[in-house]
Each structure stands twice: as C-alpha cells, then as structure tokens.
Image (cartoon, rainbow, N blue to C red; front, side):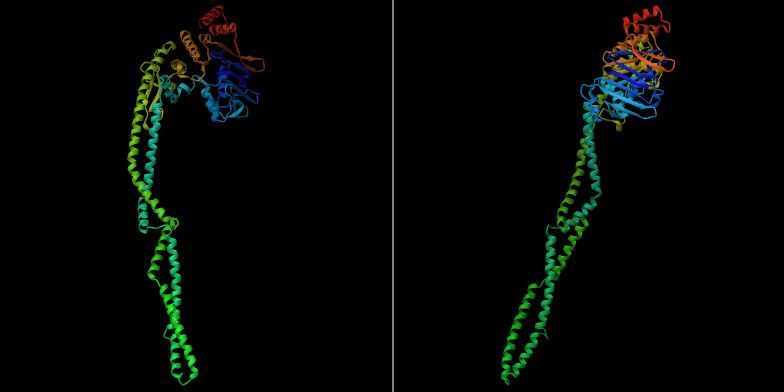
Length: 551
C-alpha cells in the first residue's frame, strides 16, 4: 500500500507531502489544476522515463519519494538485486531527475536502476488510465488472470512439461552423440582392427628394444671374434705359421740339439693357440643369432612406435587405447539400440503433457465462460449495454507450448451489435476502455492484484446513474485494496474515504499546484462545486449531502 508521497520541484509543484490510507481515496480539482502531475510524479518514482521537462522551471532537479508498506514477494526481488531491506520496515522508493538531463533511482537510500524501479512498480501499483497499455490491456497477462479467476491448478501441466523437456533433451543429446560417433565409425573400425591385428602388450616395446640392443651388440662382438678366429686359424693365421715353423724346427732339430728347446716351446705355443682358437669359436657360437630375429624384432618395434605416434600416446598405452576405442564402438552400437527406448520415453512424456494440457484447456474454457458472464453482468450498469465481452482460449502452435500449457488467452470486446470482436485496447474508446477495465477488475476482484490501484478519470464522459455505478464498484474494490481515483464525478467523489483537492495558486509571480486533504465540511463544498460549477448553490450543497449520506 502507498502510505506517503513527497514531491519536490516537479512541473508546477514546488513542495508537496501527502499521506495515504487504506480504502478509496479520491482526487478532484478543476480542469487544468494539475491532477495528472501527481500520477506523473508517482510514475517517475516507479521507473517511468526521467524527462528533464518534469523539472520545475528554475530548479536544478526534481525528486519524488514514494513510501510503501511492501507486499509479500518484494523482499525476494530486492534481495536478487542486492538491495538490503529490513523485514517489517517501509519500502522507500526515490527518483531524482536533473534539469540538464540524467536521473538516479534509489530504493531504501541504496542506488537502484530504472529497470528495478519499473519491476517494483508492477508489484506495488496498478495504474489504469485511458492510455495505459499494460496490466489488463496486455494479452501476455490474460492467461494468468484467467487461471487465478478460475482457481486453476497448473502444477500438473508444469510438471508434465518439465518431464517431457527432460526426455526430449536426453533424446536430443543421445542423437547428437550417435551422430558424432557415426561420423567416426569408419575410423573407429579401422583403428580397432589395426590395434587388434597388432595386439600390443604393456612392456612389449621396452622388451623389444632391449633384445634389439643385445642382438646389435652381439653382432659386433661376433664380427670381432670371427676376425680373431681368422687371425688365429686362417690360412695365413698365427696357428698356420706356428705349425709351419714347428715343422721346420722338427726337421732341423735332430742336427742341432740347441733347437730342441725352441721346438718344445713352439709346440707348447701351438697347443695354447689352438686352445685359444677353440675358446674363441665356442664364444662365437654362443653369441650367434638368426639375423631374421633381429629384423623381426626391429619391424615389430617400429610398428609399435609408429602407431603410438599416430595416436599420440606412449607405446605402453596402446593396449588401453585399443580397449577404449573398442568400448566407444560398442557404446555406439548400444546407443543406437538405446535411441528407441529414449524415443519411447519422450513419446509417453509428450502424451502425458498433452493430456494434462488438454484438461487445463477445458478448465480454462469453463472459467472463461464464467468470467464472461461476470463481466457481462457489470456492463449494463456502466452504460455499456450494447457491448459484448469474451475470453478467447485458443491453441498455440507447438513451438509456443510451455509450462503454463498450450493455450493463448485474450480478452476481447465488441462495442456495437454486429461488430467484430477485437482486443480491448484497439476497439474501445477512451471512456469505454476505462469502464471495461473497471468491469474486469470487479469480476477479477479476488485475483489478488497489486495492493494499490489508481484509476485516472475512469468516469470521463459519464454521469448520473452510470457515475453512481462506477463509484459503487470502486468502493467495492476498495474493500480489499487501496484505490486512488482521479475523478470529475461527484457520485464517485462522494464514495471516497479520503478526499484530496488539487488546485493551482498564483501569487502574482509564479503559478504553483497544491494538494490538501479536505475536512468533512470542505468535502461537501467541493462535491457541491462539482455538481453546480463555479457558483455553489444551496441545492447543490443539499444534493452533495445526499450523495455523501448515500455513499
């Protein structure tokens, strides 16, 4: 509820402080007195465009401060936007506009964006006027209004929607994975076949490398031993020469006893050299290997290392890689089988959503008929006898389905017999529009609207019984909410629990707009003025008394 409004230097208002209470508050004044300035000022505090033209001539800036008893739900919005608010404390919204342009917003003296002020405004105040294109005139909110009017529970549809979307998302993800894997299927088959044919083992590369090193060393040693054997036992080797020398000594030693020792020593040398040759041959035999084994090991080793480079892994990781690729291929095959199960789940979830949505659609259609009847009952007293109202419930295309169902709900009117139905804002004239809004508000009285509602000249162009009907309905709404009404109608003004008079004052230099709350006798005079004009007669005062007593 709006409890106070402070205005400084806005257009013709120099300084104004107003307090508001519950129930119906009426604002009256002569044409041109500046009644719209109050609404402009409040709109400024609630995030309307900060036009520097609102700053009073000669002032550096304009400011508006609105104080509210905040309704439930506002605390969460403030918390989400980093604004501190004490539970049970009033909510203070302030807006400052500079004469040279630019504006600043504050909530509880903490900086706030115009967007936050606008969001707060939608929760704190409903402003209904001839040119208002929000609230009841905005089709985007009609579905929620109908659901609240019909006390419809949309939880089942919301749950079914989430279940369906979850199933759809899982199916889409699985299909994407399958599609991605399918693009790799040929490569997977080739890689798995290549690795299966190679059959790599952990530690195999190191063992092959070691064997290769051993065989390579053995080959060099064997070559040296063969050279040594050739040096010892070759046709021109040491043993051959020593044996030849021994034969020569053997021929001549009988004639020369001194050569006997030489022959004996040479025989011993031949024996030792022969033993050495045997040992060298044995060693060469022990080190001998099949050259094809070295070639085979080298081929295997190079294959392992080549494929490891190809897959950018270590040779010892090839076995694990083979298992991983084989698993990917197996999952691809299993995934293709699993798609059918996911499709079946998504189909069932869609069917469940459709069933819940169709049930909700039927309930909405029934609620729409009740709402249409309620609004129709309010139209004749508001001098809208020829007008017709209907609530359309139409199916949305599938791409627009959602957690709230698959219905488009819109309030439509036809103002003349035989005229086609159309949206409220496009069909009704200014006065008709305001009265249609009032009829809707009365029909939706239990909808739980904002705690404060403002009606701007809802009674323009009507009088007598119609104005009285408007006043009676406004008073009925004010029983559960705070209403502020800018009115030209004495029948409406007489219904007010509080009466504010807006008037211009001219001191010979500047013109200012002022607002004051009227005492009971002042209130009678103002209603009498509204009845009779500039000259207030006793008859007008008597009629004003009757209106106030009747109200």
